[in-house]
Image (tube, rainbow, N blue to C red):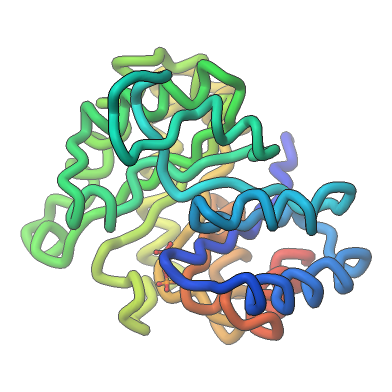
Length: 252
Ligand code: PGA
């Protein structure tokens, strides 16, 4: 059986300062040798240079929380995939629910951003997930498959083996309410089944992270599920002890 290496990724959202970032990353890098999973951090754009300086030569990878769908041009305020490469990014978040819901990113914009990332060799971490109303209406799988297929239709299924997926139920993000391991596993299995319908190898190798109030106290149980390959961590990624404990939970 193919063994998928776990990945724990911290999404700092719009938090941080030069001083706080340095303190946090010093702790994480210092703990590096005890961590066997892959570890990534998604930081605000202005800190990419700082983070590149602090993490180059470490085992951590870093990236931004979004990017432009355009390669370059008169797009005031936007940041391109190529610019992220200049700062050593390996990954980039695409389609986080805060981007979709607060900044109006449609499925097709998300698909264009995914393609823009891959065009320069960045690994997109594609976030999908349903709102509470959608879950209560029994539309969870439909929503997640719609979000996924918008991307697959654009880039093709083979492109998914150069990407990471993240299932993040919107109702669990920053709320302290976590999907139960069973609820999360059910959606992760459905995502993998969708991929398997298109390409068995891609489905088996795809890493599908869970995100939404992952904490030291629930991480091990979530990561023990057969289709959960790590976590996308928001709030707990800003606290070194919590983030490191979540990484330890992925070591097993
Ligand atoms: P949370 O955020 O861990 O604070 O719920 C997760 C995310 O938004 O990626």
